[in-house]
Image 1 (cartoon, rainbow, N blue to C red):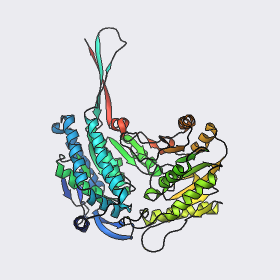
Image 2 (spheres, rainbow, N blue to C red; image 1 turned 120 degrees about the vertical axis):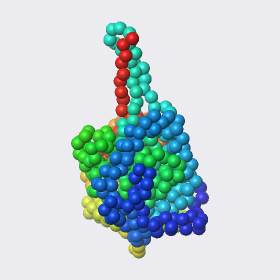
Image 3 (tube, rainbow, N blue to C red; image 1 turned 30 degrees about the vertical axis):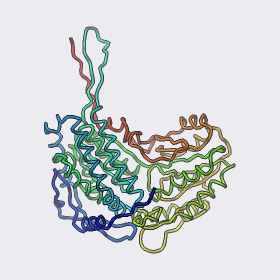
Length: 499
């Protein structure tokens, strides 16, 4: 797969886009924040401001929620045929695909990720998510039920849209996550107020322009940029929001749960992870090395399901860990806009400092820094890809989510699946896990014992819109994607008729 090259006309359009103050998208119109406030958007590869976006707050959230409520209760939307909703999603997918170069460059400038990941993982991934969810628009339905009560009756259930949905999107893969959330909500017939992370609002704002172009009705999707403690909190607390869908940290997820208690909002939370990767004695070492390295260094480790705990059988430990270390040393780190770079910066100075503090903590508790461990000199928020050896279960680097390019490696001696499962499950999280072995029986038995929402066996693919995404324990509530993710945007109504 060749690295994408951005044509000059596309660069010119992106330059023009970021040069204009970016506004809020409410009820099908662009408007400044009512306070007039804006905030600066940085390019994390240079640590310099590249744009200004409207700093929406509670007043703007209230306008957006009112617009979403009005749209939801409009008979034109309520009784719009499911096939028509599907066509809207398909038109949006085509529009995204037609603007892939522009969106990919914006995503890279905003987040720092390499252009390859921005193009294929985020932008084209978003288009495919829309196409997948468009199929669900015409397939959401209830079922008939046989009652035990005496007499003849007809009983059935309906699946109805939950209503106005507040969606809060993180900064690590902002475009595909925002689009996927919208796709499921629209497929179910909901209306949306979308709040992107303040670090990465640009592609979401461009999405608003595409929503206008393809003909989404006013108020069906509203976009409010701003800070989490103002706009995000106001959205969570708003009494006329029926559901919150949030992707982000477990700490913030718990705060959101408290905020949703006022009107008992429905809640979907896709939260943090500390995912184990198991390399058993009979595994293919080359496959395991490639997968382990990609699983922690992709997007600079800023992925909730990143395989940050590497468990390798003692027979293969030296070979696998040395292989990952060599991979890390060869990774070219730099601005994502350079197609030759394989790893970009962390998203902010705060995130870089957080990652460096964890590396320092691990070394202080006795872990060996096998490679990396430092910030790169010069501009931007770059941290070297890092591998820590001799880690123990008590270390903070083993127990807490770092959200950076830091791998904790350790060996094991026993292939017993119950012992391995105890290692993998020794965490507050339960988002994902990976297993590498030639023994498919052992793989399936271990997969059943792991308390994780996603388990991959000899497979290192990314998120697929057809597969439910979510976690056990403190990795979240509910699921995104798949049939289950779409149904999270519905309520069940039971109807019984005497005949």
